Image 1 (cartoon, rainbow, N blue to C red):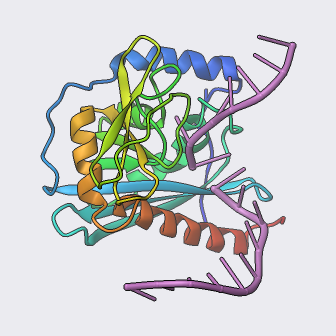
Image 2 (cartoon, rainbow, N blue to C red):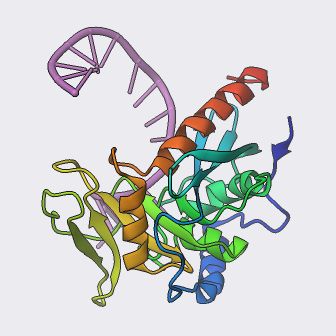
Length: 235
DNA sequence: GCGACAG
DNA sequence: ATCTTGTCGC
């Protein structure tokens, strides 16, 4: 089993990581129309951790956007490349996620990841970072609010409320995907606008709160981590 | 300085 | 993220 290590020059300090975000931020594109929901392919990415063995497992699952059926999958196991620091999540997951995406034998299409894109302290969360590094269209769908306040959206599926930054910019939305259930938190990552990001999210979550993309990727990366832990020392 | 804080 | 039992319900 190959273990993905962080590439040479990977940030080793929080200061260096923030500098990377500030430098890459200007490459983000948010004004592309992109394909409408239900067309082409859509890919979910997620990771699971084993701190005891210092391992992280990533999964990428490609779905047919029209039927939400799985058309391709790939996983990768790596060394944890950065500690968890709010605002620097991407540095913890990206090397292994890139390996999983690279092992895919199908066109990823739109990528959906856990976490945020534009709705980030420096406007450069995981979804934007992954998009700039791969050139793919990426959106972020998080399960919990981050640093931005929001009003409670209406109880109906499809209701939403803005995530507003201090300067008044709408950086994301709290979007209700199931009636009466806690909303998800959507933001644009790269080459997709916020309206489109929310439309895709609703299309991908016809039955449960979370998009099928993240549900599939979550299950797959957990399975990959169990297999990796079974043959790794420690723990 | 203190608290909050995606996964 | 992860640690964790039972329980209510489709």
